[in-house]
Length: 226
Ligand SMILES: Nc1nc2c(ncn2[C@@H]2O[C@H](COP(=O)(O)OP(=O)(O)O)[C@@H](O)[C@H]2O)c(=O)[nH]1
Ligand SMILES: Nc1ncnc2c1ncn2[C@@H]1O[C@H](COP(=O)(O)OP(=O)(O)O)[C@@H](O)[C@H]1O
Image (cartoon, rainbow, N blue to C red):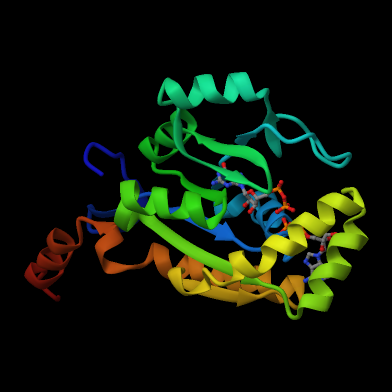
């Protein structure tokens, strides 16, 4: 992306290596754990990640906070945002509309802040098409279908009908796993969290994401060793 500010970087003899911001996308079938992992990443402040808060037309769950987990809006308001091009991407999932507001993403990336998106495979395709190399995608798999069902039941925030619909869609969602850069089988939440941090740290060091490296290396090679 042109015009994007660079995150603070390494310093060597006054030569700076900056970094382009990235978007870390987490997708999974319902109940595999992407919300828990997104919350854990957001709460670890030193990672410096900003979570994209989607708009949705679905009803709020008891544990959710409007403005933190989602902005809950009417179908009319959703369509107005879509028609005004206020959404970076949008999709219909489990019979409800979901979308990523464009402006907060542009603001965060413009300031060099990395973002996390918890969006489905349809949205992931759209973001990859528009943001290309700045996107890193991770698919979260459950350890088994039986455990996926148990997690949805243990979460106890949805009606039986809602759980059935999400389980019914799980196979179609899981089949998209090959479209993703990384795959994490979320058996142990702590281990999955460590895996995501490893992905983030490695992606931040990718050569093409580090701006100013050629000048930095030229400087290194020109330096006189006493
Ligand atoms: N495309 C798209 N998908 C979203 C967005 N926000 C959430 N989703 C996806 O919508 C699906 C349903 O999310 P949610 O209702 O929170 O249910 P959960 O998956 O059971 O936690 C999940 O696959 C989310 O990743 C968005 O802004 N865009
Ligand atoms: N590794 C895990 N082991 C056991 N329970 C988990 C694990 N990850 C998530 N959970 C639980 O499973 C339920 C579904 O997780 P959640 O993060 O809401 O999934 P998603 O956002 O993918 O629908 C929640 O009750 C959560 O606490």
